[in-house]
Amino acid sequence: MTIKLSKEDEKRAKIFKALSEVKRIEMIRYLRAHRSNNTCGTIGEAMGMDKSNVSYHLKILYEADLIDVSRAGQNRLSQLKEDTFNEFLPGFLDTL
Amino acid sequence: MTIKLSKEDEKRAKIFKALSEVKRIEMIRYLRAHRSNNTCGTIGEAMGMDKSNVSYHLKILYEADLIDVSRAGQNRLSQLKEDTFNEFLPGFLDTL
DNA sequence: CAGATAGTTTTAAAACTTTAAAACTATCTG
DNA sequence: CAGATAGTTTTAAAGTTTTAAAACTATCTG
Image (tube, rainbow over all chains, first blue to last red; front, side, top):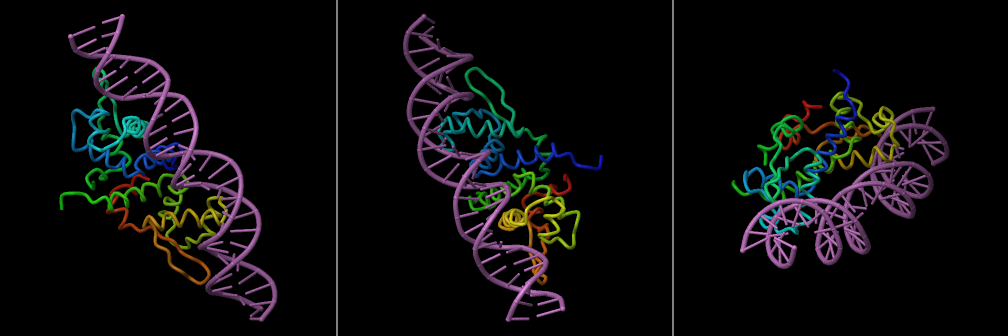
């Protein structure tokens, strides 16, 4: 493969857009440091954010394929999708 | 150093915002492939963009510290600032 | 110097993003 | 089942970004 498909650049642009807000960078750092109990409520409390706003930002990270979300009762646990970081931004997480 | 200063996250966010448009990702790829004669006009012609729009996007890349601009007569030559990529996005350029 | 060329800035409209409150859905617990 | 808890979606306002045309500035060439 030699030419780059614009589909791939659209994915890249979506990832960069997801990371283009200080709050979402802080969320990534938080998820990296706290690998369990990452609920919407816990994150919001730790970061002083409204729950609907946490939900909004997590959705953007999810749609950029930067986090995985699993259900656990009435909670929803988020975790970094390291594969995506490794593919599109190798080495980035270690700069945080 | 253990705590991360929010100033640094603001710089990161600015870099990500600069890279969050397909056109600007393409410009980065272009600058990487064409290391001389990167004038506003040449880039605009290669990418089918209006000159004022090329100037606008280059300014965003410049303000994110992703390119250097030097004057050569009435031209202005742009080149990637690899140091910034290496510091904030090590390995990224090679994924392009 | 006049005209051409290269690029920047201003402007205004359109498009998009962020926020927080309110309404909503789903699950848990007694 | 009723009430509590966790999270999502909708909404509307405020804010930001992108585009392209027009006006502008700087430099080059005869």
